[in-house]
Image (cartoon, rainbow, N blue to C red; front, side, top):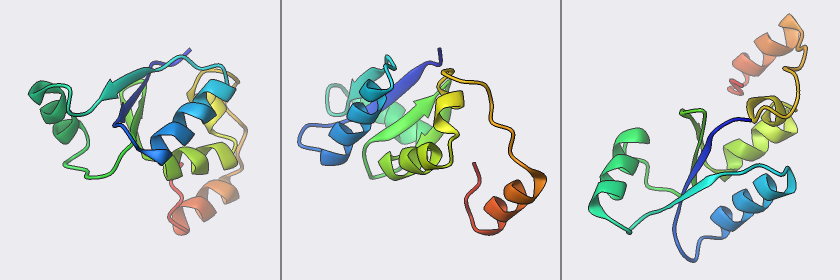
Length: 106
């Protein structure tokens, strides 16, 4: 199974939704609470290129983005294989090209 890390904070609805989605798939994740230390906050800024939104999600050290991006991967049937739950889907060449042309690079 993949290593999943979530940078979160208190009172964040999108953080709760991201955790619920991962919980529904039975995925273990490390929740990293922002504001817990300067080191954590600095690590967050470096790993996310200064992102100002939360949650920010990493799967096997690959920066996925926030909750919206997590949903996009799920709707494209690519989240489960990234999480190590299923085999990589067989996506046609045409589908891959269309995704790139429409800005859905996943």
